[in-house]
Length: 195
Image (cartoon, rainbow, N blue to C red; front, side, top):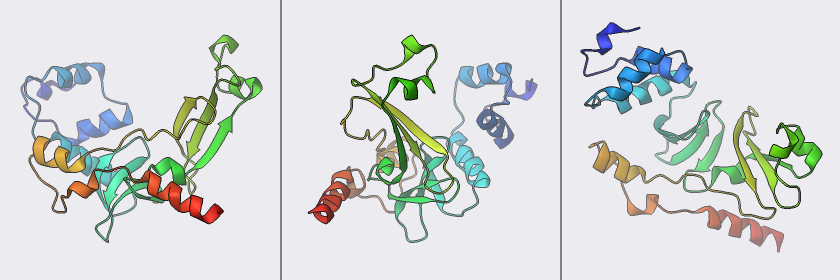
């Protein structure tokens, strides 16, 4: 238990590390949740801790999940990058389109990941899509969807608005063009190759 949290209006990076590692005490979690005013620099400390954990230097702008980040690369592009260093490309294009995919369609395949059997999706009505990094093969996401359903684009954050309106530090490359889904462009490009 960290008694210094009772009076502190700010938390240190060590506590953020504990939170990310899942080693933070229940008492400290409750204190963080009950702080009347959140410390203004917590997001920046969080990004610093994340940056310390990856083997590359591209600036992290936002974490998408346990392994994926939106970063600014050395050329100034905003891309999705795995913690192993694999680059999925423009963050406005659904990163899942550039991942390895395993699709489970049968009851036997469902039972490998669902227990008990009544909890399984119904074959023919649903399929399980598992998405993996092509480099480190970390599992990045799972979808349970009807067969033929488009790949779900889980999150296209408006980074410019987040940084400008909520964090008070606008990004230097702010542009209305950043906040648009460009996944269709990739699909059309693939469609042209098939013709």
